[in-house]
Image (tube, rainbow, N blue to C red; front, side, top):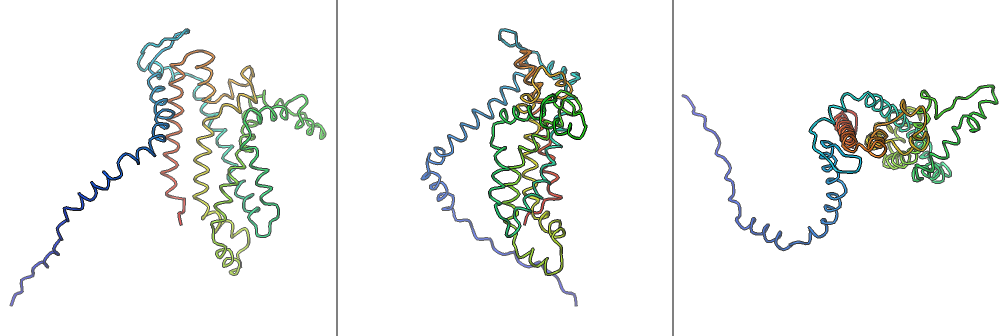
Length: 317
């Protein structure tokens, strides 16, 4: 005897109450214009000071400006010139090298934060303040001080090396040392911010995890690499994104420490410095706008890559 299989009856879907849409419309109508009043200043400020300058710069990148003003649309000539400009690859490499050196401050900040967050550590807040002061100090003031420190004739670094019979170089005037000297100062300046973020992330890690690892016989070093580093990856990712964005905006520190008449500047200049040179010294604002769009594109691409890659190594608990 055959048995016919039939599909179970579908559950009846209750009809949607037509009053729901009416309630939603009444809610929107009741709120009225007040939500826009509160977010309006923020939207207006972002549009005026962020979106509009980008759109304006993008338009200017297709123009050529005269010495006394006035612009003429020239199409993609500035971008063709950008591809054939021999200074662009060198400046891009210099900016990437500077950023890579400053990124080394992240693992250093992790170690220092771990030491400061050690239970029973005295004067930890005082040490954080000392590290944070350079971050909030004007880059121009920092650059002037470090320019004197790196001075090849009477700087304290070369004086200290002379005590051991070593003749120090002209740090900010030698192509092989100038960019490294600027990058080390950038690393030193960013250390305070990195410490604050890393310290906040470490304080969110439950102490019970360290106590359990210690009961299992894990050393402090093992706890650092097995507990602290994995659970600190969101903070590491956040700091690395900001560091890359800030690194590709290098200008003020480089300009103050080296100066525009420095013989090593052509081998050390950054993308933003070329933008400044073309816009304000050569008065070629159209080509400078194209360089600005290039900087924006490079930062956007690197940030996009970082957000795509972070899914593989960032642990969100």
